[in-house]
Length: 131
Length: 251
Image (cartoon, rainbow over all chains, first blue to last red; front, top):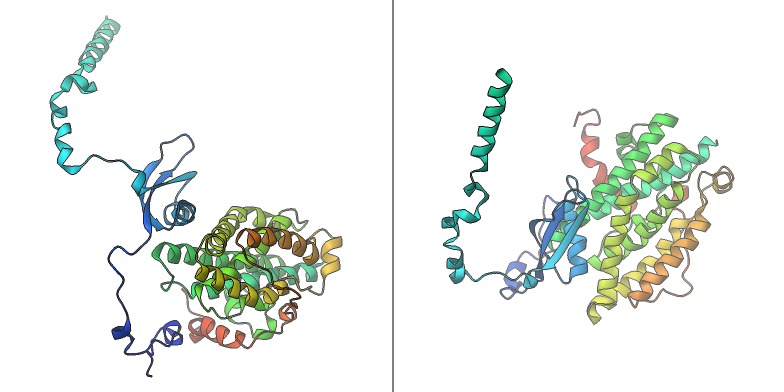
């Protein structure tokens, strides 16, 4: 049987049949490992920040992979992995529970006019200093 | 200090790193899953970095050739690597088992070398300690996963790999010509001590992975004295092909 001759010697050495593309059986949809969400901590005491996900058969392997995928560049002091299944999230059709939030200005720090008072105080201090 | 003894030690550690880096890098783009492809390629790159650091010490302290020349311009008889690192990759179980047995020895060797009286080597050993710790963590997790927590098929593949690789792994601890000098001068505590701590470590992990160490295995020797397997010549040809087309080129 004729095999593939590639510029890449590693591929040539695999002795893949030229017509093996027809023999290949496609995998079933979603026939793959579960996913784990990865949280990266840049400095001691800092929050762990979600940076992406990895495929793995279990959490131990997920941590091994996450270290190299997300911790090999830049500063890292720790990494968490959490099974995606364990992340509880709001359903898309329930997004309306958040809808009135922008209107509730009184819950927002910006709604308190502290800055005006601070500015006024600074101004009075400055004027006082000039006298 | 005995500079011939130090040179021989650095050379065999560096040549092991260079050749296993090349073998590991052969998986790049062909790994069993994306995450593993990236992790294993990164490990290969680290190994190459260790080789380069060791060749740099040889170049700077003992006036040997530059790291590039050491890696790409030497002939087979001048290399001091063991046969374990030369073997061609087969299935992934083979490469993982070799990676595990090699990295356990490498981790323990560098741990010993952090206390070396040859300070440049002790410094390097301390610097790369964490890196090799991850390599061993990666290897150990895989071996336990496929051996003890996997399927019958994965277990059998790992056992087959262990049976094949074990005699070559024992060959890592072949004595060089300066074993006694290295010990008496406190440069390195010697291959025999390393082998004992290595055996303790790998026995424990292989036990957890439900894998059985082959009985009465012989040690495959020769690499530390310049004798290599039939796989070495084609490996060197392929690894050095680009460099040798124009050794003076600036990269």
